[in-house]
Length: 440
Image (cartoon, rainbow, N blue to C red; front, side, top):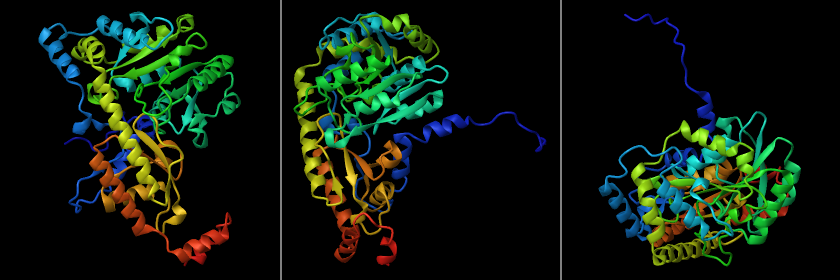
């Protein structure tokens, strides 16, 4: 029998546990785990940005046929080059060049396994001992997770809800120091549904140039805009400040499971090459996995041949859903939406827990909503550092969205605080220390 007293020399990597604790997936798993198995109604998934399960968001036939053609060609059954298949890189460059004042080449393009790997590559490439990075709050939490894993220090700048979730540019200079290497800009915004103007992005670029840092432009929701502000790629300002532009086909073509993204050095002045960032990008890709070769082989056909009517249909559907979501939220007194979403698939909503009888915070709200109404939304306190805010996804079938909003309204009505209690709260004003005893 094996000696039970033997001391094994291995153990789990605790860095992975701490890094994954600050992920949207981890938060969603927590909320989903509170669903009631006794509820016969379908679960309404207003938590993540993957509408591919809904028929109204099916990808284009052009994309599907491109995959079939790539497989049948038998040209893409082997390993791909480290930086990606050349024809795919050329096609991505041509696709992005439509919106730029200068021309990218295939050498500026690095094909990745979705936008997540592009984030991994970018953060690894800029990391050095003592470095820190500026991240938006609220923002996409994978940046925090990956930075924690890389031992890259994080400093947060606020997005301002009363100004359409614009960057607090004035605060950036106060946050940065000699060890700051980059700032992350997510446009269109996740989780806010914001879309930044040309002038605002130029201001960010000029501030980054003044600080001597590069911009990581997360544009995975690029062109998914349906408000009055058009999408402006950060790469337009590449002559002002070097930009690492991140994107993918996941959102615009509604195929997140295909895992095809890119990292682009939008830098006509060659600063990223001179500083060694380009070499670091290639070095990371040399020791990481590649996207499936046949997906890369399909990219030229997908990017060049998808018709505008497919994109228009997606935009019309998203706009209708965004409008219904915004209007539905206004019917729930404990929820406030500071700005109607103009892009991406999300909206940030302020939760007023003082109007609810037995809800302590945003996490409690989401956990009980899942249990009682089988509706999944994201508590932004845990997921995005915005206590008593919620992120709601509106990218789903309109009928499912309407059903979800009705259930949220019913949940509010069931938990709303009595009028007499509300009078006590209002009379106290900001001094709520005595609130628990007064409401007993």
